[in-house]
Length: 90
Image (cartoon, rainbow, N blue to C red; front, side, top):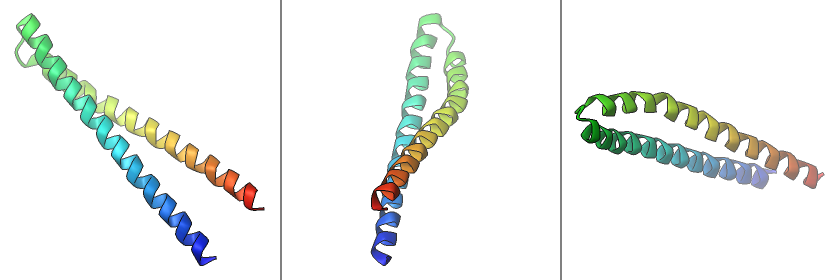
């Protein structure tokens, strides 16, 4: 019984590390796309910081939505795997 609990905790810990890594990478991609896209558009239209700032502020809710989406999918996958492993062990 103790080994199965340790295995479950190990799987959960690994899953949380992967989830945090995915969320961090997605946030970084959104921020970099906002900055570089905004700088490029500002140079094209001659509006120095305006478009960059707008894209950065628009990236905040986008990052939150992506974070929630990734977390929900990961938790759903964990739940389905846990249910399938429970049904296999019975």
